[in-house]
Image (cartoon, rainbow, N blue to C red; front, side, top):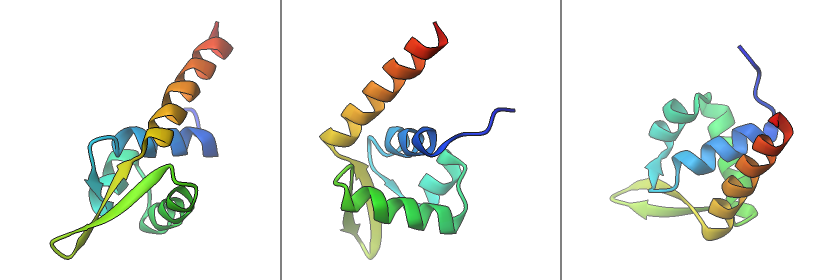
Length: 83
């Protein structure tokens, strides 16, 4: 099993959050601990790659256009490096 680097984790989070997810769902889908999800969500929202919005007392995270662009570019770069 290959370990993910920081950019892989960020791309995975943004990909999973493209349609909006709660933090717990994001943790499970991106295979993160609570602490990791908390840390990454803070960094990604401050960089405007991820939006956080309230929904009935819970926070929903959704990838921004900038975040979706990051995922596309990350996939292209990974594909280029494998070729």
